[in-house]
Amino acid sequence: VAILELDSDGRVEYANPRADDIAGRTLTDSDRSLLFWVHRDDRRPLMREVGAAMASSSDFDLTIRFTNETGGLLWLRLHGRALAGRGDRPENLFVAGIDVTREVEAWAFSERFNAVLQTTSDVIAMFQPDGSLVHLNRVAAEFLGVPADADPTGHRIEEFLDELSCRLL
Image (cartoon, rainbow, N blue to C red; front, side, top):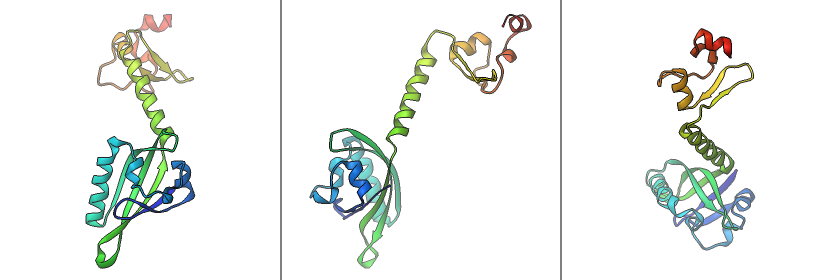
């Protein structure tokens, strides 16, 4: 887990070794705001969440893209908490971050794979070793007469076939 403490300008006052490993640089050695390394499309949402947390002395949760030293993008799931300073006004922000790059990439691959499965004109059915259905694409569902609102997961294909088709299968 990466742990950071940021001042009110977003500069890193403390970074644990894991935060520096993720960034590929020593974050406390820079006079730049942490936003400098956040992907430009994620800067505004992060600023909005941090601003709300600082204004209300509350927490925030957000997943962002972070640029490491080599220019590669990492996905980080952040949880931040405003830390009260003088007069109960937050002056610093404590942030814990977890590298979720693999999870995000696996989800994106799954989404692309499912899009291909659904748009192909081929009948595609995936089964468990016991013969129960895992997935039918749109064409397979139409071919078997599975209602659009039905979930065939866990059912056996024989449940959707007539007697002759079951014998031929």
